[in-house]
Amino acid sequence: SFFTCTYMADSGATDTAAALPLDNAAGLASALRAARTDGSARLAHLDRLLSTLRSQTVRDAVPDPPIFSELFSLLSAAWQEPFEAEAARAACELAAGLLALPEFAVGGVHVSDDFLDLAFSRLCQPANAAGAGAASLPAGPVSLVGSSGSSAAKSVRASSAPGGPGFGGGGGGSGFGGGDADAALKLELSTASEVVVWVYRWQPSSRAGLRLRIGRALLRMSSGGLPPPGTAPLLRILAAVIAGFGRPTSAHRSLLLSVLLPLHRPAGRLDET
Image (tube, rainbow, N blue to C red; front, side, top):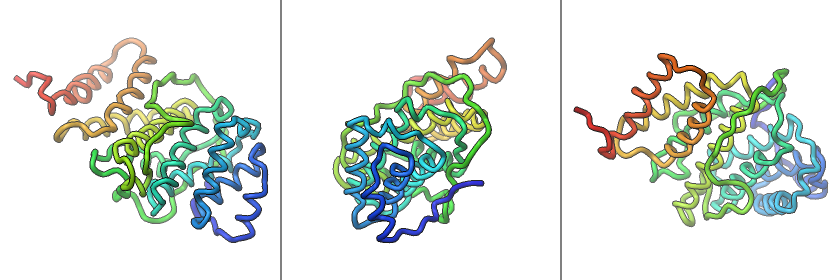
């Protein structure tokens, strides 16, 4: 079964979340849920979560499917719902920081195609669209994660965009319109690429679909004017994927000629004669 973004907030649950320690799975999941559903105290919940991340005490919590469900639900809400700029920034910083922890490098969690589509929609946004809603996605609840029996396969060593604790910048998510828009966009792209890297490493069943999404995204990026800011993070991910290629194939040649070289055309770096 899949977890979905359809939780009901109530004051009792919020009070409980504030009281539970964050060094165990139940407390961490509850705090992540409260950060998403309790709009009146969202910044307080996120500040508490970030403090625990920076102090590293959150590493005592053993990640389980509910924690990943709440984490990706929070990130989905920050990207799609009206979040305050600072809260959306904090949600992105928190997600990137948690996914970078060794304790979160685990298999057995399935991230849905809907959520991956959302992450790629953020990576593909133009430079002037930071925080714009993902118009191509349905407005209803997005299925995020659930239990999976697959085990972690060979990990991909990807150099994703900067992220994690301490990554600065004002704004974020749907609230990225405020503060430093460039820093906000950089943080959002960093977080989205961190999600893609994490899924590629720990969800082998999604690797073929991710490679297809990366190729399609880069094709779209090369078909118009200057490539959008998300091009660089996608290319870093693709470089890690290419590093794992075996002997050259026709598919690899097609990747070079149809996807990578056209990216130079908008900037005039490829002789089209």
